[in-house]
Picture 1 (cartoon, protein in one colour):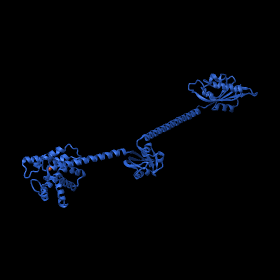
Picture 2 (tube, helix red, strand yellow; picture 1 turned 90 degrees about the horizontal axis):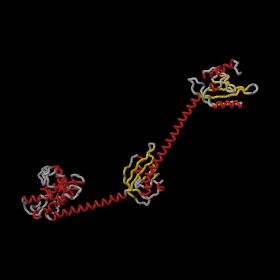
Picture 3 (cartoon, protein in one colour; picture 1 turned 60 degrees about the vertical axis):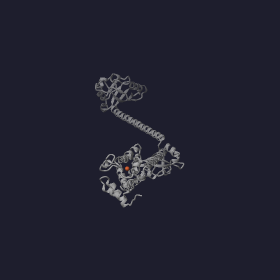
Picture 4 (cartoon, protein in one colour; picture 1 turned 60 degrees about the horizontal axis):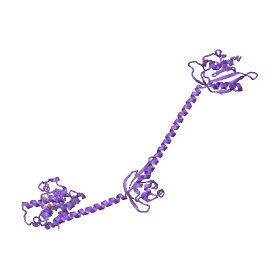
Length: 473
Ligand SMILES: [Fe+2]
């Protein structure tokens, strides 16, 4: 019978923080220490002679295999199984590090087995925690890898998209650096400019742009150049009209490059030129028509021949003197030359009748401004020519004809032509009276300035005759 006689040995045995079981070769317990009693609630005496498997529940098969092995081979075994220490309700599954040591007698035969149990549950908790953390870390790493993969995929998609966009764009793209050296272009650039991409790399932007200073300036001021029309040089030396936008490419708050997107506008320019040409032709046709109409009216009225031309001259000088814009000038130029066109419908004998006109004849003559309006109203002039012709006999105080308009109701151009008309008519010979002279004409408009005639127009008229010495032929 195995026993611990030595008191010191007994103290160590019972105060050990290891569980110690001594069993015979059949597995029956002969002795265990206080650690085991505390864990199982069973004293050493209570378990004496009872088989291990009847005391410790849920012992894995590996334990008995190890026991067998240790017995048969007379070798120590180490294992780390999980089992319940007893059926105590507060007991929890625990992990033990177990050593099985064969105990030999003096003749070298196996006398029994010493089973040493170390509770490594807390160590295992720690290991589990480490395992948990490293698992967590692995998940994070995996996620980071996935994120990186996603980001790369996204970037690739963007690049593919950008490439597709830049390759299929009708717009040319040229990127150049601070030194003005081209670093990137797209197929549209090659097509439009007739260069191969590789030929464009590394050359200075001034070899392409007729004036590169504006685009190079983007590096200095960082401002985007919007829709700027210029000429780009093709490989064959010819120039094509383009419209371009130049924007800075900013990296880390510094302008790294400038990107130019441009469009070949030669077709647009050709259309524009053609339209300009056609517009010029139309204007010429209209001007010819105006002159022809003017002559037609004057041919029937030889006494007033040249009247419309002279009125226009005076009216244009007034416009200039008043500092009015080109629009008014253009309007007065056409309306002046046509202002009496309505006389075309008045019998020639009345127009050239010497002596005083009766009321009927006067009314007939007064009808010329409305007839003029009717003749011209369907012609699409850029300016209200027919209305000015209609209003050229209207007076500020409402005493004029045909509608008795007042002040601002009368178009400015009509007010100007009205004054020029009176001055020219009075200064010239008429079938029914000799010329009254320029002095009398100026006296008339001065007397009625602000009443019948616009004051500013009268003042301007005075200046051109009195101060600038203009004289009617
Ligand atoms: Fe008239």
